[in-house]
Image (cartoon, rainbow, N blue to C red; front, side, top):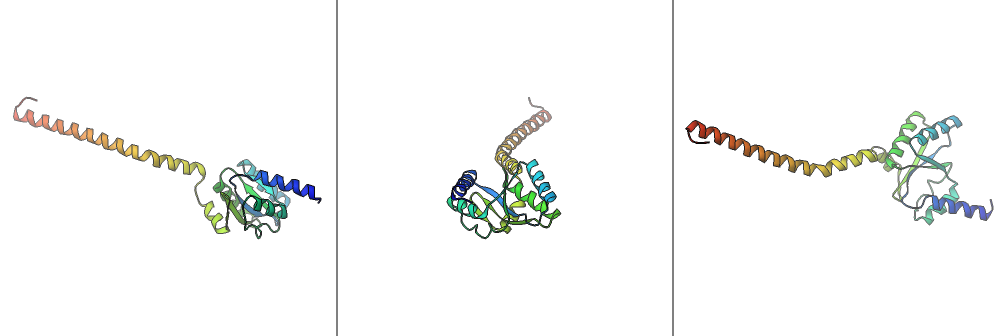
Length: 176
């Protein structure tokens, strides 16, 4: 491969993965054509992309982006699987690995930090982005709900006290 082509490919990889990067590196060496197609189709349905990497170019491109420590990960047939929700990517890959043991999950990247296999596995157990956002909305709304409940309780207590006072006065024969 000529130097001009390698330079162009490296620029393409560098520009494609600029910005905060999150994904999982896999080795798909043992997968046959049907299995690889099935994996890509399943991931594409979830808006997750699979990019097969040329290792030597990827090592240089990731170094240019400030990522180091990927030399061992980028050996063999490597692909970077990435999408809008990193937890969802990890979940789908580990679920698919249960069905097809030949898929090897190597490591990952989250916010331009290299993750070990254990950290990727931990990421797969986290709730997805929508669940986290709904939990956050609940946490933000909770204090207002508590305040509204306290104010309502105060009003109910005041109304109850006034009613009891009215009943007491009417039993004593006084004016309400």
